[in-house]
Image 1 (tube, rainbow, N blue to C red):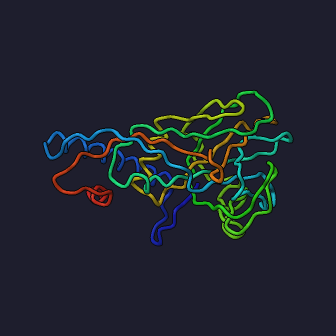
Image 2 (image 1 turned 45 degrees about the vertical axis):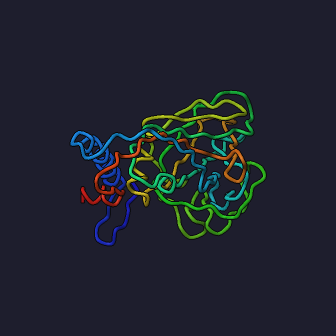
Image 3 (image 1 turned 135 degrees about the vertical axis):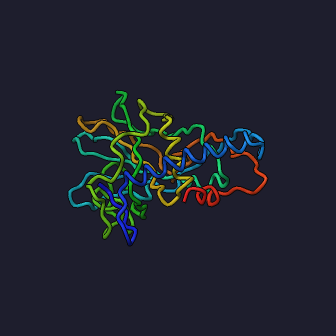
Length: 261
């Protein structure tokens, strides 16, 4: 269990997630009430594409000294020796949508540029539960490179001094999205849970730790190499959203949150 230290009381992840869900519902209710009360007019739907702010790979390694923060690929799945890789990616959604909005749907796009075989793999996207880093390490292949300062590794959130609570990363066990991923080419994940994740990160940007991506870890050669943000075809998300109706008084995320403190 991950615990956030507040200086006064410890707050568990379960409490944070519950509070975010309440705030998400409050924002949606506020928009409905504003229109019903005639205080605002309906807004038109919009769409924005956001590139990854950071990405990295957790290479299974008992010493926790491998990473690829600046490499051109991120990896998820088991290699031929059944050694696991897990990809990390984060998007600055609060910087992309600066006004209060209802998130209608979200798509995560990743481009596979290498695979050991053509067997489709069911790959899952999980909400990360702690911050992590992207250092200057570069792995040209799938074995990882010596971790640099600030890199995420199998043991570290930020190499060499800050550790995950659990080796292999801290993340929600239940996936936010699932997709069947074949060989080379673009692949997309889409679900209501992805939209909920993005909504929560808009309401509370400090809780945006991105997603961790997994492939089956009970067999060999399930790995996929995706283009990283260092390439022209790096990870992106497409967010379909409806701005909150124009109100008589300006509305900001801070104003919305203050209504429920």
